[in-house]
Amino acid sequence: MRIDRRFLLKFGASVPLIGVAQHFACAAGETADEKADYTIRIGTGPVELAPDHIISTTLYNGQFPGPLIRFKEGQRAVVDIYNDTDVPELVHWHGQMIPSDVDGAAEEGSPFVPARGMSRIAFVPKPQGFRFYHTHVPAGADLNRGTYTGQAGPVYIEPRNDPGAYDQEVFLVMKEFEPAFSRGGDMAMDMLAPGVPIKELEETGARADEQAKGTPKGYEVSYELFSINGKMLGAGEPIRVKQGERVLFHVLNASATEIRSLALPGHVFRVVALDGNPVPTPADVPVLWLGTAERISTIVEMNRPGVFVMGDLSDDDRRNGMGIVVEYSDRKGKPQWIKPKPFRWDYTRFAKTDARTPQPDETIELLVVKHNAAADGFNLWTLNGEAFSMKTMRPLYKLQEGHRYRLKFRNASDDIHPLHLHRHSFELVRIGGKPTAGVIKDVVMLGGFQTLEFDFVADNPGRTLFHCHQQLHMDFGFMALFDYV
Ligand SMILES: [Cu+2]
Image (tube, rainbow, N blue to C red; front, side):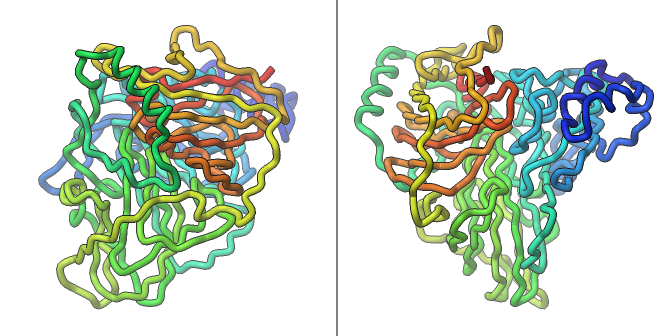
């Protein structure tokens, strides 16, 4: 067993409340003797998605999804991470406001978990709500790396007091397996509201296409097998419910690249939290849409007895596994699927009724452009003309602690981008031209040829990564680093 030499330093940096001096006073032996609260083992193993579909991939603790980790908000946790693979790894604590060196992103300075080695980290989990953990290594052209693997698991940070107005809590992790490169996809692109494509952005996109004339479009990734909680539709245990029950679902889209949808025929979802943060206006919707890495917490009242398929709207993906059976007690029979009416996903539905937000101290504009097949057959992505360089890791912008920043995105591509900011939450302030307020997230979908604005307060000093969560986009330029002055 090898202890990462940086781990003492990490302790000092991550326990501000207890005091750095005290931690440096404990000898290395004492901290090493301290028992870990959680242990994560990264290793390759099989996943039985269905009896006739057993795949092999990299997993946490030999299972997919990785074990549900329940932290207590504000209560320091020690996590041992063992890497039983031959390549360095990173475990990122998505959606938590923790220091850069334990966040699990190399761009921020988090050390790798060495191949065949281990790291011990400690941090104070926050904020409360539904988060997750996943690998943060680039995959590039290797479909056995990064989020194409099974390295993802749910995290729930228990609030200090839980209202508990539900009868059952169910975590759902949506995930595809057996990826392959393809040219062009068939993903739904017209499911976001409000907003219409902006002509000027279409023209910018067309000019970029013109420059790449003659080259085919860049690689995309498609998948053969689809699952919820590591089981293809029908292969796992059904979710068993009783009439009149209120079931709280925590849904995670753990896809590397895809947008997912979810519907339960005859039932509505009352959305209570987005990315783990309670929404100002809980509202009922017939369909959930989640970009890569987005989470939705939603209560369903079980008031229509039967046996149903809760599944993705894509017929192909659902038939290849993206669904789970919901079964009322004493009901038997073939699970029913009824296609819901088309429904556009609108974050502003859950917003404050008054769309006023504080004025930002500074505004940063970011133009997103796709360069077809410009990187060895992969699309290259630029922000204000620059693709992120893993070599220089140059910070794009220096933040002043305490300032409120507004990021204004203009998307000159037809793709939807799940934008993600590390170590901070942001507030949506404008989507497709419509002002909004009060929806706090850490991932948001930016529509094709559309605009979006969000604000964040620089309240967690340290290097901070921003990127598109679509693995192909983040690996090929769509990243930016912020630092504090
Ligand atoms: Cu993207």
